[in-house]
Image: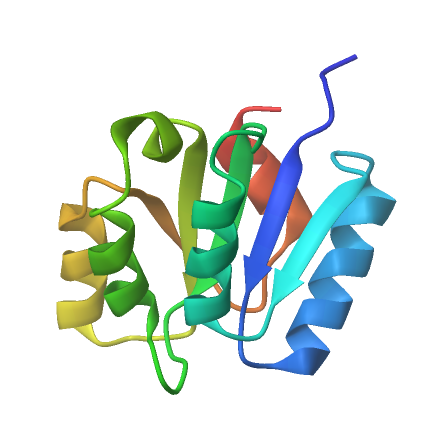
Length: 129
C-alpha cells in the first residue's frame, strides 16, 4: 500500500474546503489535510513549519480575494529550495481563460491545472497512485 499523502487545501470557499477534505480522507489517500481559506495564511504556515513539514501536496484555488493562486506561486518561488522541494502544487480552477491556462502550464511550480469541481479519481491519476 502506498504511504498516505499530506495535503494542504487552499481555497476561499468554506464549502469547497469542507467537501474536498472529506473526499480526500474518504478516498484513503490521506489522513492529514490542513485547510486554509487564505493563501497568505498558507504561506505563513509553510514558512513557520519549514523544518518539520513532511512532503505535501497543495491543492490551490486560482481565484481568491486578497491573494490569488498565481500571487501565491510568486511568493512560494521566494521560499527556500529545501522547502519548495517538499511541495507539489496542483492549481484548481473552473477557468476557461486561455491566459490563465497557459500561465499555469508555464509555471515551474504548478504540476497541473485541475478542473473544479475536483474529482478524486482524476487527482489519483495525476498523482500516479
